[in-house]
Length: 152
Image (cartoon, rainbow, N blue to C red):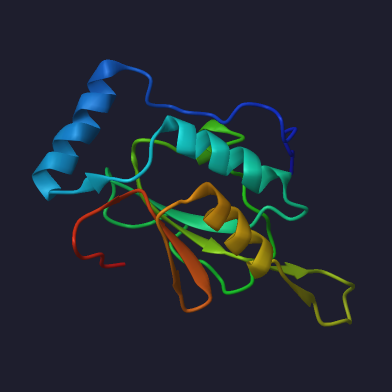
């Protein structure tokens, strides 16, 4: 697994006007309001990547019916990419992100993994950035685009 330097800029894929307009059309059709902008995405990605263990997350694009990855464990055994690669790009097309603030750290073949909980750090970071977040079942749900109701 390659890890980008925490100071490298986040990756955004929606740079052409047609893609941006397509997202806007979907938002209007689904009556979703936007709660994030490029500055907020950039601040979030850089702050998350600066954590000792950047938390894993599941994202839902406005283009898709299902989130990616399909399942998010309570304590994943991997860390989050936070827009280091095109596959993990964040920005205008993201409807919501579900953040798992725990990490399952491997300690050996015969030893039960240690669960490292960084909930307090993630909570403080999200609060400091003043992002639209809801805590739900041990996860943080960041609402990038939302209507009055949110179903996940």
